[in-house]
Figure 1 (cartoon, chains in turn orange, cyan):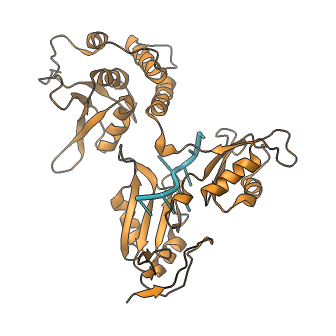
Figure 2 (spheres, rainbow, N blue to C red):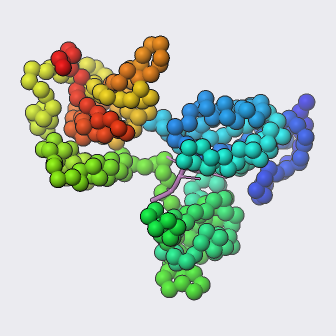
Figure 3 (cartoon, protein in one colour):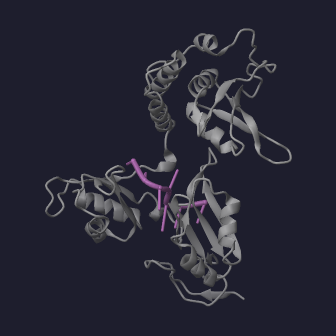
Length: 359
DNA sequence: TGTCATT
Protein backbone atom coordinates (compact mmCIF):
# COMPACT_ATOMS: atom_id res chain seq x y z
CA UNK A 1 0.00 0.00 0.00
CA UNK A 2 1.27 3.40 -0.92
CA UNK A 3 -0.02 6.67 0.43
CA UNK A 4 0.18 9.90 -1.46
CA UNK A 5 0.78 13.02 0.56
CA UNK A 6 0.46 16.56 -0.62
CA UNK A 7 3.38 18.94 -1.03
CA UNK A 8 5.46 19.45 2.03
CA UNK A 9 9.13 19.65 1.46
CA UNK A 10 10.54 22.00 4.05
CA UNK A 11 12.20 20.19 6.87
CA UNK A 12 13.52 22.04 9.84
CA UNK A 13 13.24 19.89 12.92
CA UNK A 14 15.86 17.46 14.10
CA UNK A 15 13.64 14.50 13.50
CA UNK A 16 11.78 13.43 10.42
CA UNK A 17 9.32 15.86 9.00
CA UNK A 18 6.04 15.56 7.25
CA UNK A 19 2.91 13.60 7.69
CA UNK A 20 3.34 10.80 10.12
CA UNK A 21 2.34 7.44 8.85
CA UNK A 22 2.61 4.22 10.77
CA UNK A 23 4.33 2.14 8.14
CA UNK A 24 5.78 1.84 4.70
CA UNK A 25 7.23 4.26 2.23
CA UNK A 26 5.64 7.64 1.71
CA UNK A 27 5.36 8.98 -1.79
CA UNK A 28 5.16 12.70 -2.31
CA UNK A 29 3.21 14.37 -5.08
CA UNK A 30 6.24 14.54 -7.34
CA UNK A 31 6.54 10.79 -7.20
CA UNK A 32 9.77 10.59 -5.22
CA UNK A 33 9.82 8.48 -2.11
CA UNK A 34 9.89 10.32 1.20
CA UNK A 35 12.36 8.39 3.26
CA UNK A 36 12.73 11.03 5.97
CA UNK A 37 11.42 8.58 8.57
CA UNK A 38 13.35 5.55 7.42
CA UNK A 39 16.67 6.88 6.20
CA UNK A 40 19.46 7.31 8.74
CA UNK A 41 22.94 8.73 8.62
CA UNK A 42 25.50 7.00 10.77
CA UNK A 43 28.63 8.92 11.74
CA UNK A 44 31.91 8.16 13.48
CA UNK A 45 32.18 4.59 12.28
CA UNK A 46 35.51 2.87 12.91
CA UNK A 47 37.86 3.12 9.96
CA UNK A 48 38.04 -0.67 9.64
CA UNK A 49 34.34 -1.33 9.48
CA UNK A 50 33.29 -2.96 6.23
CA UNK A 51 30.06 -2.60 4.31
CA UNK A 52 29.17 -6.13 5.42
CA UNK A 53 29.74 -5.40 9.10
CA UNK A 54 27.83 -2.16 8.72
CA UNK A 55 24.87 -3.94 7.17
CA UNK A 56 25.06 -6.70 9.73
CA UNK A 57 25.00 -4.27 12.66
CA UNK A 58 22.05 -2.26 11.40
CA UNK A 59 20.30 -5.28 9.94
CA UNK A 60 20.03 -6.66 13.47
CA UNK A 61 17.38 -4.01 14.14
CA UNK A 62 15.08 -4.78 11.26
CA UNK A 63 14.70 -5.16 7.53
CA UNK A 64 16.99 -2.86 5.60
CA UNK A 65 15.74 -1.41 2.34
CA UNK A 66 19.21 -0.26 1.39
CA UNK A 67 22.43 0.76 3.07
CA UNK A 68 25.75 2.19 2.07
CA UNK A 69 29.05 2.73 3.78
CA UNK A 70 30.50 5.82 2.13
CA UNK A 71 34.00 5.33 0.75
CA UNK A 72 36.62 7.46 -0.90
CA UNK A 73 36.20 7.08 -4.67
CA UNK A 74 39.91 6.68 -5.28
CA UNK A 75 41.34 4.81 -2.32
CA UNK A 76 38.26 2.84 -1.33
CA UNK A 77 38.89 3.85 2.26
CA UNK A 78 35.86 4.28 4.46
CA UNK A 79 34.97 7.89 5.10
CA UNK A 80 33.66 6.88 8.50
CA UNK A 81 29.99 7.36 7.82
CA UNK A 82 27.15 5.67 6.04
CA UNK A 83 23.44 5.53 5.37
CA UNK A 84 20.81 2.99 6.31
CA UNK A 85 17.32 3.07 4.88
CA UNK A 86 14.92 0.81 6.73
CA UNK A 87 11.78 -0.68 5.29
CA UNK A 88 9.88 0.30 8.41
CA UNK A 89 10.06 3.74 10.09
CA UNK A 90 9.68 2.01 13.45
CA UNK A 91 12.95 0.21 12.89
CA UNK A 92 14.70 3.47 12.03
CA UNK A 93 13.45 4.88 15.29
CA UNK A 94 14.57 1.75 17.11
CA UNK A 95 18.02 1.94 15.51
CA UNK A 96 18.47 5.47 16.78
CA UNK A 97 17.36 4.49 20.26
CA UNK A 98 19.50 1.38 20.51
CA UNK A 99 22.59 2.13 18.40
CA UNK A 100 23.18 5.85 18.78
CA UNK A 101 26.10 6.32 21.15
CA UNK A 102 27.29 2.74 20.73
CA UNK A 103 31.02 2.45 21.35
CA UNK A 104 32.88 0.60 18.62
CA UNK A 105 36.63 0.37 19.06
CA UNK A 106 37.79 3.96 19.62
CA UNK A 107 34.65 5.55 18.22
CA UNK A 108 31.25 6.44 19.57
CA UNK A 109 28.87 6.15 16.69
CA UNK A 110 26.14 8.65 16.01
CA UNK A 111 22.87 7.52 14.51
CA UNK A 112 20.36 10.12 13.36
CA UNK A 113 17.83 10.82 10.65
CA UNK A 114 19.44 11.83 7.39
CA UNK A 115 18.45 15.21 6.07
CA UNK A 116 17.06 15.17 2.52
CA UNK A 117 20.03 15.40 0.21
CA UNK A 118 20.32 18.76 -1.48
CA UNK A 119 22.95 21.15 -2.73
CA UNK A 120 22.03 23.68 -0.06
CA UNK A 121 23.35 21.54 2.79
CA UNK A 122 26.77 21.01 1.26
CA UNK A 123 29.85 23.02 2.28
CA UNK A 124 28.14 24.27 5.42
CA UNK A 125 30.97 23.41 7.79
CA UNK A 126 32.99 26.17 9.43
CA UNK A 127 36.42 26.26 11.00
CA UNK A 128 36.72 28.64 13.91
CA UNK A 129 39.98 29.71 15.52
CA UNK A 130 41.04 32.25 18.10
CA UNK A 131 38.28 31.25 20.48
CA UNK A 132 38.77 32.17 24.13
CA UNK A 133 40.14 29.10 25.94
CA UNK A 134 37.31 29.43 28.41
CA UNK A 135 34.67 29.01 25.71
CA UNK A 136 33.04 25.59 25.68
CA UNK A 137 31.03 23.82 23.03
CA UNK A 138 27.73 25.14 24.35
CA UNK A 139 29.03 28.71 24.48
CA UNK A 140 30.24 28.43 20.91
CA UNK A 141 26.91 27.01 19.76
CA UNK A 142 25.11 29.84 21.48
CA UNK A 143 27.28 32.35 19.67
CA UNK A 144 26.64 30.75 16.27
CA UNK A 145 23.03 29.64 16.68
CA UNK A 146 21.72 33.10 15.80
CA UNK A 147 22.73 32.38 12.19
CA UNK A 148 20.96 29.08 11.73
CA UNK A 149 20.44 25.50 12.77
CA UNK A 150 23.62 23.79 13.97
CA UNK A 151 24.08 20.17 12.95
CA UNK A 152 27.35 19.47 14.76
CA UNK A 153 29.84 21.43 16.75
CA UNK A 154 33.20 20.62 18.27
CA UNK A 155 35.95 22.34 20.16
CA UNK A 156 39.37 20.78 19.82
CA UNK A 157 41.18 20.09 23.04
CA UNK A 158 44.83 19.60 23.83
CA UNK A 159 45.74 15.92 23.83
CA UNK A 160 48.27 16.01 26.66
CA UNK A 161 46.71 18.43 29.10
CA UNK A 162 43.43 16.57 28.57
CA UNK A 163 40.57 18.91 28.13
CA UNK A 164 42.15 22.33 27.70
CA UNK A 165 40.62 24.06 24.68
CA UNK A 166 42.92 24.75 21.78
CA UNK A 167 40.77 27.72 20.87
CA UNK A 168 39.83 25.97 17.66
CA UNK A 169 36.53 24.46 16.70
CA UNK A 170 34.07 23.39 14.03
CA UNK A 171 30.47 24.36 13.43
CA UNK A 172 28.35 22.64 10.84
CA UNK A 173 25.18 24.46 9.87
CA UNK A 174 22.17 22.87 8.24
CA UNK A 175 22.46 25.19 5.26
CA UNK A 176 25.42 26.71 3.47
CA UNK A 177 23.83 30.16 3.41
CA UNK A 178 23.57 30.02 7.20
CA UNK A 179 27.29 29.32 7.34
CA UNK A 180 27.96 32.20 4.99
CA UNK A 181 25.95 34.55 7.20
CA UNK A 182 27.86 33.37 10.25
CA UNK A 183 31.17 34.17 8.54
CA UNK A 184 29.91 37.64 7.65
CA UNK A 185 28.65 38.24 11.15
CA UNK A 186 31.39 36.67 13.27
CA UNK A 187 34.69 36.56 11.38
CA UNK A 188 37.05 39.09 12.90
CA UNK A 189 34.62 39.83 15.73
CA UNK A 190 35.41 39.65 19.42
CA UNK A 191 32.99 37.43 21.34
CA UNK A 192 31.50 39.19 24.37
CA UNK A 193 34.20 39.50 26.99
CA UNK A 194 36.96 38.16 24.73
CA UNK A 195 40.20 40.05 24.21
CA UNK A 196 40.96 38.67 20.74
CA UNK A 197 38.85 38.47 17.60
CA UNK A 198 37.93 35.06 16.23
CA UNK A 199 38.52 33.77 12.73
CA UNK A 200 35.58 32.07 11.02
CA UNK A 201 35.96 30.43 7.64
CA UNK A 202 34.85 27.40 5.69
CA UNK A 203 36.48 24.21 6.95
CA UNK A 204 38.63 21.96 4.84
CA UNK A 205 36.93 18.86 3.64
CA UNK A 206 38.91 15.89 4.99
CA UNK A 207 37.94 13.72 2.01
CA UNK A 208 39.63 16.24 -0.26
CA UNK A 209 42.96 15.79 1.50
CA UNK A 210 45.63 16.34 -1.12
CA UNK A 211 48.48 14.06 -1.96
CA UNK A 212 50.67 16.73 -0.47
CA UNK A 213 48.81 16.65 2.82
CA UNK A 214 49.11 12.88 2.85
CA UNK A 215 52.82 13.15 2.20
CA UNK A 216 53.21 15.66 4.97
CA UNK A 217 51.39 13.24 7.24
CA UNK A 218 53.61 10.40 6.05
CA UNK A 219 56.70 12.50 6.62
CA UNK A 220 55.59 13.41 10.12
CA UNK A 221 54.99 9.75 10.86
CA UNK A 222 58.39 8.88 9.44
CA UNK A 223 60.16 11.72 11.23
CA UNK A 224 58.97 10.51 14.61
CA UNK A 225 60.72 7.20 14.02
CA UNK A 226 64.06 8.84 13.34
CA UNK A 227 64.73 10.51 16.63
CA UNK A 228 67.28 7.91 17.76
CA UNK A 229 71.05 8.49 17.49
CA UNK A 230 71.62 6.10 14.58
CA UNK A 231 70.56 7.22 11.15
CA UNK A 232 71.26 5.04 8.21
CA UNK A 233 72.00 6.57 4.89
CA UNK A 234 68.90 5.01 3.43
CA UNK A 235 66.74 6.58 6.11
CA UNK A 236 68.21 9.99 5.45
CA UNK A 237 67.59 9.41 1.78
CA UNK A 238 63.99 8.48 2.48
CA UNK A 239 63.37 11.58 4.56
CA UNK A 240 64.93 13.77 1.91
CA UNK A 241 62.64 12.22 -0.63
CA UNK A 242 59.60 12.93 1.45
CA UNK A 243 60.64 16.51 1.99
CA UNK A 244 61.37 16.99 -1.66
CA UNK A 245 58.13 15.38 -2.69
CA UNK A 246 56.19 17.47 -0.23
CA UNK A 247 57.79 20.77 -1.00
CA UNK A 248 58.73 20.16 -4.61
CA UNK A 249 62.36 21.08 -4.15
CA UNK A 250 63.70 18.63 -6.68
CA UNK A 251 63.06 15.28 -8.26
CA UNK A 252 65.33 12.30 -8.26
CA UNK A 253 66.62 10.98 -11.52
CA UNK A 254 66.02 7.34 -12.45
CA UNK A 255 69.79 6.79 -12.33
CA UNK A 256 69.98 7.83 -8.70
CA UNK A 257 67.11 5.56 -7.80
CA UNK A 258 68.50 2.67 -9.78
CA UNK A 259 71.77 2.86 -7.93
CA UNK A 260 69.85 2.94 -4.67
CA UNK A 261 67.41 0.14 -5.16
CA UNK A 262 68.89 -2.31 -7.57
CA UNK A 263 70.81 -5.13 -5.99
CA UNK A 264 73.59 -6.65 -8.05
CA UNK A 265 72.27 -8.64 -10.98
CA UNK A 266 68.59 -8.03 -10.38
CA UNK A 267 66.59 -7.16 -13.45
CA UNK A 268 63.60 -4.92 -13.29
CA UNK A 269 60.51 -5.99 -15.13
CA UNK A 270 60.07 -2.60 -16.77
CA UNK A 271 56.85 -0.92 -17.80
CA UNK A 272 54.89 -3.85 -19.18
CA UNK A 273 52.09 -1.89 -20.77
CA UNK A 274 50.20 -1.16 -17.57
CA UNK A 275 53.10 0.53 -15.78
CA UNK A 276 55.75 -0.22 -13.19
CA UNK A 277 55.05 -3.16 -10.93
CA UNK A 278 56.18 -2.84 -7.33
CA UNK A 279 56.66 -5.74 -4.93
CA UNK A 280 55.56 -5.10 -1.34
CA UNK A 281 56.68 -7.62 1.26
CA UNK A 282 55.87 -8.20 4.95
CA UNK A 283 52.21 -7.21 4.93
CA UNK A 284 50.12 -8.53 7.79
CA UNK A 285 47.62 -11.38 7.26
CA UNK A 286 44.85 -8.81 7.68
CA UNK A 287 46.22 -6.43 5.04
CA UNK A 288 43.84 -5.45 2.30
CA UNK A 289 43.97 -3.52 -0.95
CA UNK A 290 43.00 -0.26 0.70
CA UNK A 291 46.19 -0.14 2.70
CA UNK A 292 48.20 -0.35 -0.52
CA UNK A 293 46.17 2.44 -2.07
CA UNK A 294 46.71 4.51 1.02
CA UNK A 295 50.45 3.92 1.10
CA UNK A 296 51.21 4.42 -2.58
CA UNK A 297 48.50 6.82 -3.68
CA UNK A 298 50.25 9.93 -2.32
CA UNK A 299 53.25 9.30 -4.55
CA UNK A 300 51.40 9.48 -7.83
CA UNK A 301 49.29 7.56 -10.29
CA UNK A 302 48.48 4.08 -9.02
CA UNK A 303 46.61 1.96 -11.53
CA UNK A 304 46.35 -1.30 -9.65
CA UNK A 305 46.95 -2.89 -6.26
CA UNK A 306 46.74 -6.52 -5.27
CA UNK A 307 47.11 -8.33 -1.99
CA UNK A 308 48.08 -11.96 -2.46
CA UNK A 309 45.88 -14.15 -0.30
CA UNK A 310 45.86 -17.78 0.72
CA UNK A 311 43.16 -19.55 -1.25
CA UNK A 312 41.64 -21.35 1.74
CA UNK A 313 42.04 -18.90 4.63
CA UNK A 314 41.66 -15.74 2.52
CA UNK A 315 44.40 -14.16 4.63
CA UNK A 316 47.17 -12.15 3.05
CA UNK A 317 50.25 -14.29 2.40
CA UNK A 318 52.49 -11.44 3.43
CA UNK A 319 52.96 -9.68 0.13
CA UNK A 320 51.28 -7.78 -2.62
CA UNK A 321 51.83 -5.76 -5.76
CA UNK A 322 51.23 -2.17 -6.77
CA UNK A 323 51.32 -0.85 -10.32
CA UNK A 324 52.25 2.76 -10.88
CA UNK A 325 52.17 4.61 -14.18
CA UNK A 326 55.22 6.83 -13.88
CA UNK A 327 58.73 5.66 -13.16
CA UNK A 328 59.68 8.72 -11.11
CA UNK A 329 56.70 8.34 -8.85
CA UNK A 330 57.20 4.60 -8.48
CA UNK A 331 60.87 5.15 -7.61
CA UNK A 332 59.95 7.81 -5.10
CA UNK A 333 57.38 5.52 -3.51
CA UNK A 334 59.92 2.70 -3.25
CA UNK A 335 62.65 4.91 -1.83
CA UNK A 336 60.21 6.30 0.71
CA UNK A 337 58.26 3.21 1.69
CA UNK A 338 61.00 0.59 1.74
CA UNK A 339 61.70 0.14 5.45
CA UNK A 340 58.47 1.90 6.37
CA UNK A 341 57.00 0.57 9.60
CA UNK A 342 53.39 -0.48 9.22
CA UNK A 343 52.07 -1.47 12.62
CA UNK A 344 54.71 -3.80 14.03
CA UNK A 345 56.13 -4.75 10.64
CA UNK A 346 58.84 -3.23 8.53
CA UNK A 347 57.92 -3.25 4.85
CA UNK A 348 60.25 -4.28 2.09
CA UNK A 349 59.41 -2.44 -1.09
CA UNK A 350 61.13 -2.77 -4.44
CA UNK A 351 60.45 -2.98 -8.13
CA UNK A 352 59.15 -6.43 -8.95
CA UNK A 353 62.02 -8.47 -10.32
CA UNK A 354 61.89 -10.82 -13.26
CA UNK A 355 62.76 -13.70 -10.98
CA UNK A 356 62.54 -14.29 -7.27
CA UNK A 357 65.85 -13.35 -5.70
CA UNK A 358 67.41 -15.80 -3.27
CA UNK A 359 67.27 -15.33 0.47
C1' DT B 1 41.72 21.51 10.71
C1' DG B 2 37.62 17.12 13.21
C1' DT B 3 35.54 10.78 15.69
C1' DC B 4 35.73 12.43 7.49
C1' DA B 5 27.56 14.62 8.23
C1' DT B 6 24.39 13.81 2.63
C1' DT B 7 24.55 8.55 -0.89
